[in-house]
Image (cartoon, rainbow, N blue to C red; front, side, top):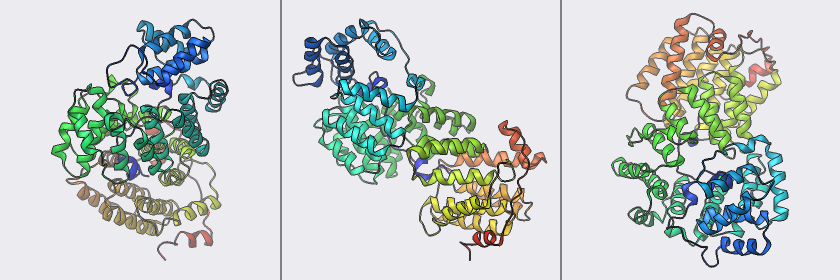
Length: 540
């Protein structure tokens, strides 16, 4: 299994909440002091005029959202008064309106889970027939479509949103996030550079710098970002920018220069900057002063995932990564990491569940496909679900497609082939595949190299192979002076397999007790001559 080099890497990209969840965040408050009335020519000013002329609840709801984004208090308060005086308005909107007027606290995270995504899409489409020029509703529609894997629909909806409000900071950031997900980074860059506020807005520059980092480029706005960090701007507005600058320094090996940027990012962190600091602690062996309690940010699921993982609390890391996936359903990254943690816990049904969720969003994600195959192969001899020879041949066909590829997917696929051979009773062949995978991952410096070695040792134990002691010695030698983001997983799993060896019980019974699942009968797999021939494809 693998967490994927891309997923175990991290950049400070915007978190894409729904517009109703986003209005209370720092990124959607004005960097400048709030004004008493809408600025001439602003969208909230036009909506305020429309509300005064029509006095309709739909316009009030749109004005409330837009005024919150633009930081226009007058329009927001007028809209809030109309919302709470109107019957049958959405409960979450009423609560936010009351908060604006009375300072009441509220919680609306996951309220939309009361209805499924398709129902949410239908509701927004109905609303858009009444208010077709609501850019926030179009952005929410794009978010729901991408969570369902409807890439074309998501793209079209977001283009409408950004066309209606090209100056909106939040819309520009989430649009850039969407097109990066769609593997169109040039369009992401274009959306940001077309926003006239880019050079003066720390949130936009933070996104642009991180976007360049994803593409292995250096942003031309680095100096503008450094200048903004020196200005008298609230620390909450500078958190992501400082974190992006810290990451830029890390990428060039300048850990000493990265530290003060991390420190600045944590004065008033948000979910993304806090997660970045937690990630950097392990990935670059750097102390970031990230002593901020992650529990202070209620929905900082990614930060909590990394914090738990670093402490080798894999059960909590899995739980938080699943929360993270629910809060960011448009991203495959939490699903990849959740399947990774589930694999370390040998929770094969959970791996399949999380890979299914991730593949719905990113059907071409190689790590998710390979983790799914891992779960199915690792279940052989443990779970008594029926596995046909045709299934195995299908796995081999997919694995074979990586035989001449480059990158971590190649070593991951070959390791899966080694696992399959061991489980089919071909231990010698399994050893050869694993050794090939280990060489590739070592030479290419993959983060999961150590965990791959531990997996091989586990299989040698299960097969009673005479080389298991030698494999353990190799692992112990490789772990000396090791660091990096893959180390906690390898240490945790090595300890688990050592305890298994000392327990003297069968593997299926051991992981049943460990995961709380039922003990299963071993699975008999018939090996035809065609299958025996197929499993030699790479080494012949």
